[in-house]
Length: 388
Image (tube, rainbow, N blue to C red; front, top):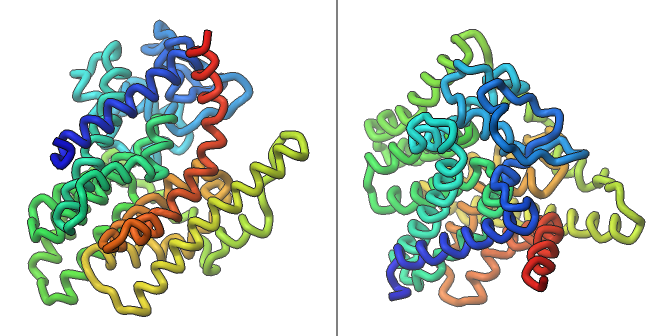
């Protein structure tokens, strides 16, 4: 039974839901909107004023609070855009909120449950596709559970960000690209770009790979995966704006990464706790460094495949990713860089030994260690609640 990918995926989702349930029960008093991490200063449009929202004190909140508003108002007609800074940039990432809105049939009272279901649905897809890929490569499908170690998976389940969707679509892309199933690949890439604009790099890498294989027609058709996102971007900007994504780049190679290493974040803790957290920050950054080294080794060895081409495109962007906001916290760079981390793991997801597979998993595990510190308070609340 445990050799069937859908069984493994279902068990994984059941476990993840139980983790969410325990967190909500003992950390947020049973209020599931606590997972959106809503800040006290976050504007509440009129149509949400009757809802019992869990609001955190002394915090800026997190991106989940923005996706929450978008899910209630995906077409920018009810005032949510006025409550979001850089609304057109945020609305680019429409896939998960739009799916939640559609699943809820546009009814506000069902949007929250639908949103949580969409997130868990992508968890199922990620585990299932990775289990299938493991089978194709001669590994036990239980390796599909490694999807739960992707930083984007952890942060999305805890903070309701959309990054889990892109992580799942990444493994779906590799699975179908290696099988030569073109329309599935194009559909997945189209969804990926609507999830996060950085997926456009995956499309670019894949098209370049096809061109090097002299598959010009397939490359042109695959580039059409950008069209839905392009049309959506024109709609939300009325054709008059450029994306804020360019502002995240710095043309000095590795500037953002090295600046974060040289100038570590200082936290408002006591000296001992601050030192521990800073140490785990460096451990997480080591995970990024190891991934970039692995990509460099791939390039030196001239590894070339659809997945490798996507990895090179993503790695090039990471080299020039200079905005401090992204590098500030492992929750940020861990989830934003998850496509690179995960696709690199998948590229090495052929090792003949358990040791080799675990080594390939190490960079993500190092980031997960830092993320686990953020979840320590939730775990403590769960333990206390269960012991009462």
